[in-house]
Structures are given as C-alpha cells and as structure tokens.
Amino acid sequence: MTNRPTQVTTGEVRLSYEHLLKPYSNKPGTDPKYSVTMLIPKSDVATKQRIDAAINAAIGEGIAEKWNGARPPQPPTPVWDGDGLRQNGEAFGAECKGCWVLTAGSKMQPEIIDAGFNPIIQPTDVYSGMYARVFLKFFAYNSSGKKGIGCGLGPVQKLRDGEPLGGHVSAAEAFGVADTPPWQTAPAPMQGAYAPQPAPGVYAPQPAPMPGTYAPQPAPGAYAPQPPIRYDPITGEILS
Image: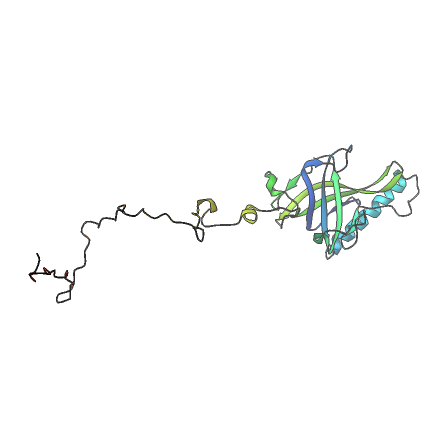
C-alpha cells in the first residue's frame, strides 16, 4: 500500500460510465482516455476523509509547483455531491443518490484484477454497475489559465457484481420466455370463417375401423327396428 499523501485506495465503490478496457473521448478533438466514474457511499466516511486529505495535499503541491506560490480562491475538485446538481446544472441520476461522485482518468490502461487478485480477462466481467476498489492519485493542474485539482486513475479491483447501469437489457427481458415459439403455433380459425363442405352427392370417405376393434351389438332381447311390411293395394298380398 502506498503512503504518499496524494494517493488513495478507496473502499467499495460502484462504477459508472466505465471505460476501463477501451479509451474514450466525449469531446471532439481531445485525446481518448481510460476513465471511470465512482459512486462512493456517503456512509463510507473513511474513504471520503482520505480523499479530502489527498486533495489538500495536491493543493499544497500546486501552490509550490504549479500556481506560483498562490492558492486559487476556490480550486475546483473532481468530487461532486450525488444529491446535488451536475456541473451543467442538471440533477444526477437516481443511482448517484446518497453518494459522492468522482471521475478519474488515465492515458495508460489500468490493471484490472478480481477479488482474488487474478487478472480479469473477459471483457464482459467489467461493466458499469459492478462494485470495486480503485487506486487514485490527485494532482494539481494549470492549463490555459485554469487551475484546479484532477484525479488520475490507477489499478482497479473488482469486488462483486451489481445491477448493470446504462440501459442494459438481457435477452430474457427483450424477448420473454415461451414454451412454444410463436412462429410454430398454428393460428386459431377466425370467428365466422367459412369451412368448406363436400358438394351434394359426393362421397365423403369415412375412416375404416381399425383391425380387431369391437363393433357394439344390440344386447339380447333389445328391440331392433324392422323395415316396414309392404302390401299389394289390390290383392292385399304381402309383397316380397
């Protein structure tokens, strides 16, 4: 562990706007950097105290090395109140409530390890919403007349998974789960639809009985209807 006053290893923080595997630039004409925004719970007082102390140490270095011996009245720092407003005046997202918001960046890709200190190789294991510890280095800057405190990004240790941030949608959420794919389900007949019938006088084949099937017979003594007897209307004789 480092003991330099401008360096801090955080407690558990949640990562947002993660660009740890590929450099990114949100302003045209600027060099892309590896960066991440950290959501630091306000309940983690110890981490916030270490950050405040590191910022004060960086201000001291700035007075001695960057700002010609004079401290700016209110040097801007990279720490923001998640319950307040962004630099552009808009409110922070719901995930920032109850947290301090801090962004750090680096031109060099940071080392990323897991809780067992093993290098993380799979890109899908690193995402906005996971929980981690982050090594930070605060520094003073004097650029184009702007004086303040910046934050450099060092190694990142993933501690555990979390709900992804940034509108991530799983396949199950996108398509749902069905026992039978809808394209394999036969459509039900429409109400009132015409079902074709055989033309009058056309023989409609009936299914033949299966071999060995039982054809029911009338029970003994049961009445079986007989055809009517026909008589000759003149002689009265029974016609065959």
